[in-house]
Image (cartoon, rainbow, N blue to C red; front, top):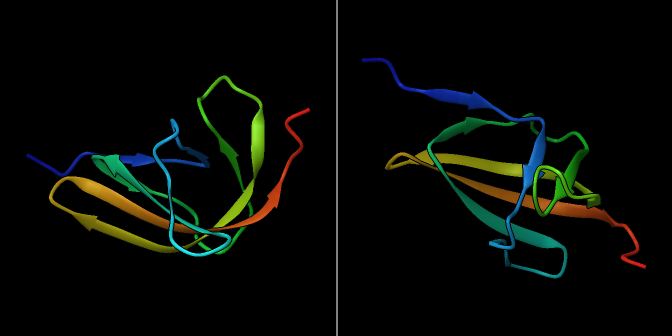
Length: 80
């Protein structure tokens, strides 16, 4: 059986992101997911929520059927 792979074009956090540095966050997603690297992507809490900002993925790791994203939040939209 082949490795299931999902291609993503936005970062959906579901509130599970962890701050590593001031603007650098890490997010663990179930399954193997492929994301474009080093280009601006929308960040959303859920698929149907408004974007909360933009980020660039700086590191992508696959291990134990999980994807670990490390991303730099490049802009944060106002929540007002």
